[in-house]
Image (tube, rainbow, N blue to C red):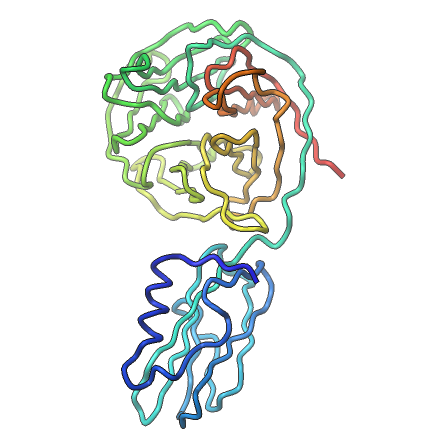
Length: 348
């Protein structure tokens, strides 16, 4: 059985397994870090070491899932719970005094991601000076976030003519900032920075900076997308996607992204398309299709054929833009000389 053990949960498990005079009681199953697919059942089995017990309360995270007055095992299910790490606890009462033994499970996506193929519909020029960190399509134009520190040319926010790749308008960021993901909300552009913990708000038409805000939702700023309603999605280079209020920029919740094998790290540029989150994975030629409610990777497209020939690892796929009115998807990468309009199709 595959095991994925979070450090914090390992510490809990070790501490709870080393109680002074009751250390002989232990959880046999699930073994710490055991993976269980979403919707599957698992068994909680405790070795009571022949100690006389009054009762046992079993919990999954903080929710009670069973109460027993004997030492038989308990069956539990992962249906309806989020993907990721969950604490399994047996609260044991002996002589009225409780002690706890804990383990953990890691809930994975139930199914393998649906594979997608793609066709190139159109190919357009792209400015090779742009180390693309964010890409958006609105009202016939592309909005692009170009990220670098001063020693490699600095960062900028750009308005780009889709068909020609011509930069129509550009503002440079202060050299201390590394620009990251962007999204458009109404008449504003929201932009993250990499490690600086700051976000910027611009007027969409003039690119005039309107304000700054503290960004603390993730460990770093990476990708950004808007769901078209009230939520911004951001990534931070882990397997987490954070949900922010579009007006206050405060985090409301977080999902962990998993496929059927484990966590999917290095989530980067994001786009929200037809109710799903589309994500690049840093250094991988992939687009993932993610369920925003569960974090499950439901689809995966391999765009290896679009990678520039003979270029080094910096020239990675990063940039997804969606023309909602025209139902068109655009993709590009860091320092790429081309922007591609592509169409994804599931492989049956």
